[in-house]
Length: 95
Image 1 (cartoon, helix red, strand yellow):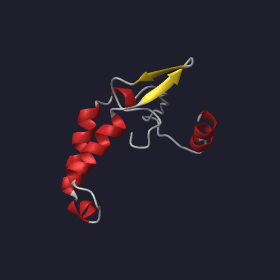
Image 2: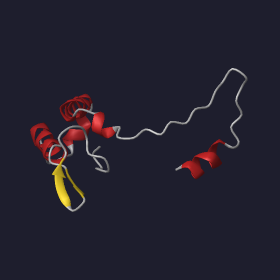
Image 3: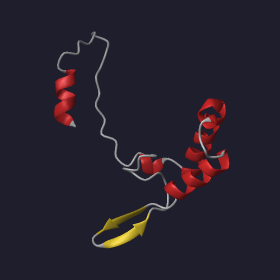
Image 4: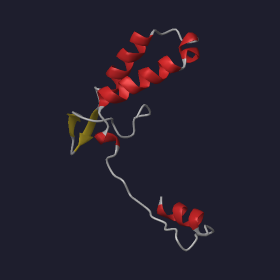
């Protein structure tokens, strides 16, 4: 939040040729393609085989769970429920 950010940067010393910028990015997760995020996650798991060795799941199981969790996201607005069509759901731990 802004108050916390101000406390943190109060003691930051910048050189003359340096600049400080603060950006408030909204809806970032909704711009991440779900299929690409799943592919990258599975690739990372392949690169670290040890992580899969201790799990009771196969790579296929993990892919199916990711698809289920990330492609079936619903939210409520004005008393109605909507299914998110694109991007990763904001507030989801997996995002």
